[in-house]
Length: 151
Image 1 (tube, helix red, strand yellow):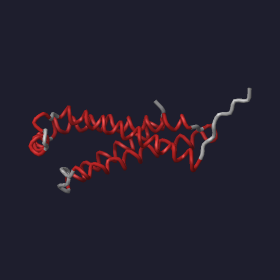
Image 2 (tube, rainbow, N blue to C red):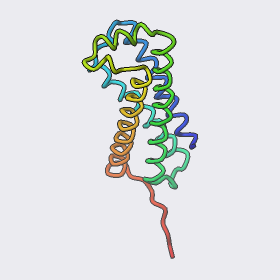
Image 3 (spheres, rainbow, N blue to C red):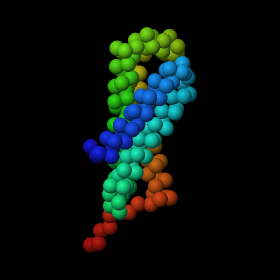
Image 4 (cartoon, rainbow, N blue to C red):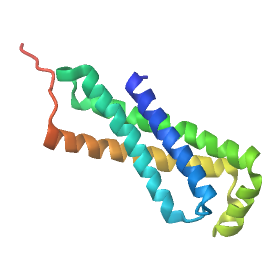
């Protein structure tokens, strides 16, 4: 695993956890639309990783480096956050899990594991899409240096 991915994932994970507790403390945790803002923290971690990779490699940085670094950062942010949600709902605040079950349409089928798994799937898909979008922007507007093969 690249150092940039680990650092970017840490940035994303910390942002996601802090945002979770902020929304919980403000009583806004059930506002589903606010979950979309999780993407901002994920994008922040991905951008951090890609920028770190660009700085580290300089002219050797290429599109593939950015994709790997960004996707890795997304996973390194999402995996521990999904695990955190599982632990939180299962052991720390099971009453919150019960509230979710009562408020969601299909809530009686929902478990803390299912909730964490959905977060993992949503986060992974969002992270991959965000990485691809960021790298397309860099390719079109900022540029990167391709490794040249002079054979």
